[in-house]
Length: 164
Image 1 (spheres, helix red, strand yellow):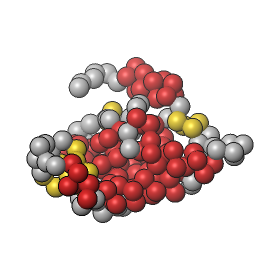
Image 2 (cartoon, one colour; image 1 turned 135 degrees about the vertical axis):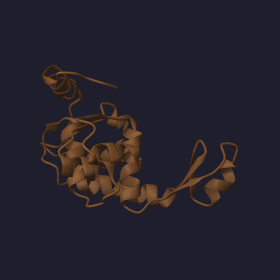
Image 3 (cartoon, rainbow, N blue to C red; image 1 turned 45 degrees about the horizontal axis):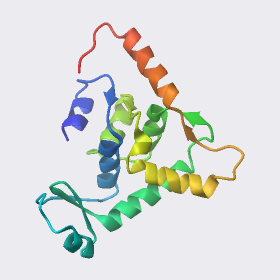
């Protein structure tokens, strides 16, 4: 909510995030929920309830699987070419109309969102499903990490001041 609000209020010009935060945003956008738990919970018991534990937070394993499949299916619509995480995340954000979503809000407000290690998150699972379905295709979507760096440097070079 904090990042979404900062974007919506025009207080940030660009967001650089972990893939995990963007995945959780998508998970919530398609109806997933987070529940406060305890870091000492019995993971075997949680698994029997189809709950995953992220330290002290619980999430719905079945909704995670839905999110992974949704990412794979949405990626089918992306142009079959290399792209930066910014281009891809904007594309994802444009597919949702959730006023509470970081990605949807950023897409609507024109704020670029970068996640240079996107593949090293659960979004990578959805992208792997896409890859598996398209691995023999002559052309397919590919995340271009070098393009991420280039685009970030261009934004930095054009900014009169920066902040963390």
